[in-house]
Image: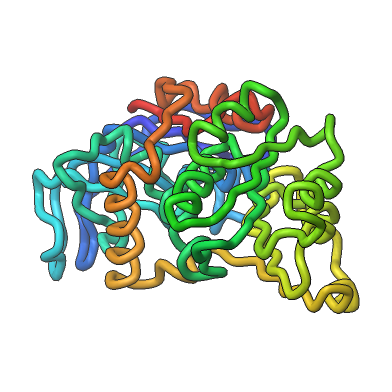
Length: 324
């Protein structure tokens, strides 16, 4: 038996319970991983609250962790017992001391990457990679807008996009968060709730707007994001931390010949080659100093409910890591 955070019903943070669960031996294509660090992401809140359905209840949640391989099943030759590994992806279940899981998503960690860095970077870093390189690639000379620029993904987008030669405008809620976005790589910041975001974007861009908006906030920012786009701009809606966006009339896109996409990492990281390529680019960007593994809050795994409360209240910048 191992300890895990388990939910028997969807709801607020209080539905998460610290309890004993069985862990067995890996079958074909599987591995047993002893977790050393577990990442916390908004998608975990979506599963906990019921916004995203779980396959069945009771269940554990969590989509990202680092640890040590304890055993592998038949056919697994890319990791071995004793390897330091990390992963990001379904099925949920990372909020535990150890688990048996598909080995397909496991990647071995470079020597210079700590377990905490990996647990804070895998999902958010791979998200930044596919957004900047695959969904709507950013090029030298582009001007982009990043919402929640001091959040876990936002900080990575700011640094990585700047390294690619883009001019980065970031929105944040406080001057303190704005300073962190600037330190990460943003050229300009706008305080939403205190400033007119679309007006400031027009001022910064000489009334042209931005070529791409990367919006992980959703309902509260969507309309403003559309206003900020240039002609033939691209709206990349990759999350909904403030809630889902209302249905969109396609005629809205015709105002500027705008494109709209709602991507998810797991449609890009679909097999071993793509997982290795995306995660490899994340580790390379970290080694080059383009991005950093910023851990804002570390808590015991048993206190995952507090991590969810802090994340939902936007009290953190960077990543949250849980320690089993």
